[in-house]
Length: 277
Image 1 (spheres, rainbow, N blue to C red):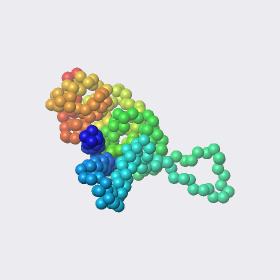
Image 2 (image 1 turned 120 degrees about the vertical axis):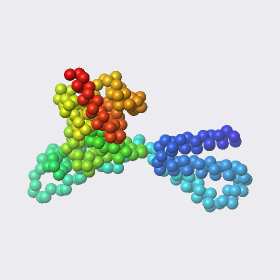
Image 3 (image 1 turned 90 degrees about the horizontal axis):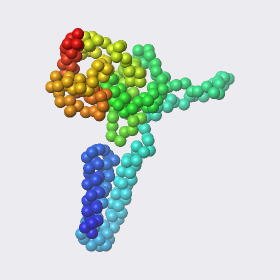
Image 4 (image 1 turned 60 degrees about the horizontal axis):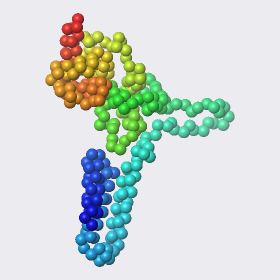
């Protein structure tokens, strides 16, 4: 009996930890279900189980049904990433039937999902989505959000797969009027700007796009050099998250932008450039 009770408590603790790490409706329902099941079992074990079941009667089956339903909801939510469901479909709407007498080639593919925007430009949304989905890694997607100044909290949600994240980024860029910038940012990530084509340090200021600053730091500074810049700004480089140079640079710039200290970085870059000359 003691062993079973310990196992039940461990199960509740596991569900509690998962809920605290990933607070969501799925894990909330799961935690409530297992906790109720353990309490019900303890209650029946404390008193005469057979007598209590007789007294509860119909209500016991209601409680048991609720527990089964709760665990079914939990299982459905946990398996959602495996099922690969996405809330938004990227496929174009079905083409309406052609009027009688219209000739079309049987092999002609349906037109791409093309969207025209206020600035007169147009892009193939489906093609751009496929470019990001098939050619971008995790770091590239984070770079894309940085280049577009999109807050990760605005597009990322719990229990979300990468496909839905890409859709959210594209939708946010469209709402912000950044469709041209989105296309350009994707092209720059796939084909980075050559160091020789980057502006000179004296041409960089606080109004320069975040993309230019990111590429400039990547092209002109090693991790040791970036650590020295961080030290000049009074920032502990070890506190900047990232397992590689790209991630470090991106998170370093985000740190400065969020604290309105990007002008201090510009001053350091200018001073460094003057010393080299």
